[in-house]
Length: 503
Image 1 (spheres, helix red, strand yellow):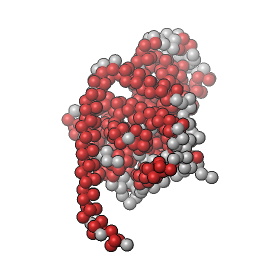
Image 2 (cartoon, rainbow, N blue to C red):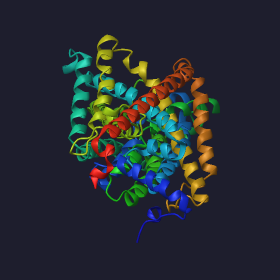
Image 3 (cartoon, rainbow, N blue to C red):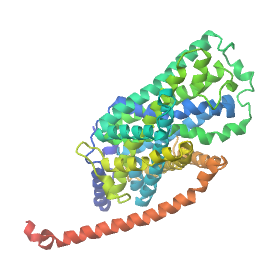
């Protein structure tokens, strides 16, 4: 029995040739990809995308700013992250594609929107890649044996390793991401298990009895008031960056319409367990004031227990998380850039694909941009992390916004009978769709108040808009030249000149 999204919807006869041409175009964009990602790969990609270094490193500082209210902030941001994934899941059920939201933007909003969506996503991963190789270099220098090694050497090494893995094939990427995600999940699972034992048994931690009284005795849930909890939303939400990666993986997943819904639905309870559960345990095992921005809260807890080498273990975990992010960035941008090039929104060379189904043109182009981080680590190693970090946030917000808008437009076409419905719908839509867009807009407003980094990032929006406008004009001019050259070549060919000769 055919899936409902595969059945031909009822349309007028005049629309069918155009729709057939559109379907053929989208199908050509998927040619060459190998569906070698298995359910376990997709499950871990979804899980790993929802668990980043923000929890391992950033939670300590955010506990200082907001106290136990951080658990509520993670929950609220997690709900919207889940809604974004459900919106993407609905689009995937309509048409799985490695071009993901770039391809959906082309279908529902036009080529210009696809151009903007793709290059904003590229802004995210290009800058994130530079941050990732910088992070790897910093984490490697934690060990004294590497203290004399220049930071740029580790940055270059990380880029070389992950680039090689991505050039081998999608199956190798999936395996690497599976084990990277397993390290992150395993670490959190260990903390949750140990913390739950201490909380349930009432065993003292650093001389204090664990329990909810630690929250009540230190200012309650909002020790600094409501405003600090609201302000950290703009930082916490980016802990969920990469959740959209499952959409890109859909095009190379066997039986994507069966596997993806399960992976997406499982994200919500993982957010509740790993983010909210971890913060609740942290503030009931030790007073929230025991944590600081200068140390991972998990290192603080295990350090109070006297566990040896805990800092070393946590350094391995965050090193793995940085490598995972770099790996995901190269994978996704190779596919997204190829989808853009197929529509004329990116240079033609990034559409090149190997016999093994690897879009090497887009991967190598991204590697070249990420490589900027190597001299950056040589020239200004101390500032390299901050210089590019804030720019990635604009790309993330834009990407999520395009996903939700495409889902809204898809539902409209379904209601008009232009497209077939899908069984995996975004819950509460269209209300939740518009609510999610309002939330993303609120995040941008909150970023503007985060001086100086967030303020300057928002101030850069007109510059980014101008660059996209100029880029779009250049892309269209290039596409027009290519079309003219192709038409001239066809007209000059013997077959075109003498159609009878082809009979």
